[in-house]
Image (cartoon, rainbow, N blue to C red):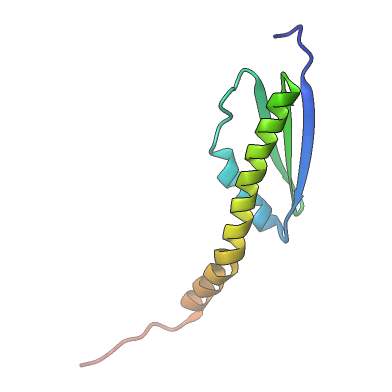
Length: 104
């Protein structure tokens, strides 16, 4: 493998906040690459961007890995859009609300 040239592709995904980029990184980091000897993936958060770098032995593996990554990113973005702000607002309201005590 050391004689083979690696193909490197970097993808930068902008998010609306550093928090959302960090959440996406944490979610995607859990899934390891299926072909660890042929695909190396690194994820870093810079500001509001999630940066993914793929090193692969073949261009085909680069395409397959990036397609899978983008499908996962799409799911994370839709989930954050659907539940992220609502869940954060509910948590804030719950934390700032005074407890209700009923006397009988």
